[in-house]
Image (cartoon, rainbow, N blue to C red; front, side):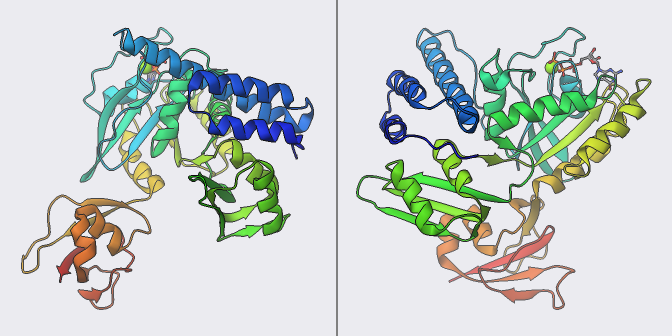
Amino acid sequence: MPTNLPPDAKDKWAEVEATRNPREKIQRMQEFLSLVPQHKGTMKLRGRIKKKMAVLRKEMEERKQKRAGRGGPKFFIEKEGAAQIALLGVTNVGKSCLLSAVTNANVLVSAAPYTTREPVPAVISFEDVQFQLVEAPAVMEGSADGRAWGLQSLALARNADGLIVMVDLSRDPVGQLSLVLGELEKARVLVNKPRGRVDIDRRYMGAGLRVILTGKLLDCTMRDVKALLRSYRIGDAVVKISGEVTLDEVEDAIFESTTYRPAVVVANKLDVAGADAGLERLEGFVAGRVPVVAVSCEKKLGLERLGAVLFSALGVIRVYTKQPGAREPSQRPFTLRRGATLADLARSIHTDFERDFAFARVWSDRLVFSPQKVGVGFALEDGDVVEIHVR
Ligand SMILES: Nc1nc2c(ncn2[C@@H]2O[C@H](COP(=O)(O)OP(=O)(O)OP(=O)(O)O)[C@@H](O)[C@H]2O)c(=O)[nH]1
Ligand SMILES: [Mg+2]
């Protein structure tokens, strides 16, 4: 639905974007809200701006606490391993129990609600790769509006490479999943690949406006897009549009971009009576949109499948490098994302490697001739053995 904002509201938003100081930014946002007409088309927008203001307020509070030496809550956990996975769910579904079952993290499992109040990082292994699993404090109704530590948990999800949403099969798993997905959506995190996406990268003054269209505009022309951006005084930016996108979606991206995070639903407490019926309802609701893994963390049932499902959902591939002339490849793989090329591999080994790259030899069962001599654009797959030759 179009927001049909009046020009003075759009001008005000340009002011918001230009303001760096958080206190002033909140003030400008408040002014912006007072200029937004109250109708159905602006309802979502108003909600989102209020959320943004809540995030800014929390961040200011956090900084104040840090200065006072009281530590304060953690929004980010430094990444380790092939990917960082945020473990989310309402309270008491067994998130800590999963950590204690599959990692060596020292966490408290308890029947009391809201036991975990700070993010807990841990390491989970699958074959020869390691992922970082971070238990987020419980998500609840209102998390995205700043209730309790909700904003931290959602920031964790936004910053992670993938998500596990855990539900308890003995207590309305569909309701729990909808609640968590709803809060994620309010925080602009989607678990299903959107049809298209818009990225607005604001640049310095005088840089000009460049719109790069690799997808398709569904209900408008390039001229409409530029006119819309200009009406918000966005004159210096690189705007990338891929997939299929509507003009409303471009307008949406002006306020905040949406992120997509691959997710796996872990359905816990399979051991409890009635869990089977819960699982059936859950699978009906999910309808194949994301993988569902049924487990019992307490009885250690079904957990052996988790690593492989995460590995495939995250699109991780392993590549083993070999020194020219060596007989065996390295034991420890480089981990990359599906679709990565030799250029990506070379870059992740060393920046010089990409510059000096001459050719590579790749060993794989999928190749007709193995080893095959290939160039820098060659698309790698899981299990490839690669020997890079430099100039
Ligand atoms: N029957 C059964 N109980 C479980 C299972 N996994 C966890 N529990 C119980 O569920 C309760 C909550 O477990 P936690 O792991 O602390 O839950 P959490 O999701 O980390 O909860 P908070 O951190 O408090 O939000 C505990 O009493 C666990 O013993 C399971 O597979 N089966
Ligand atoms: Mg916990």
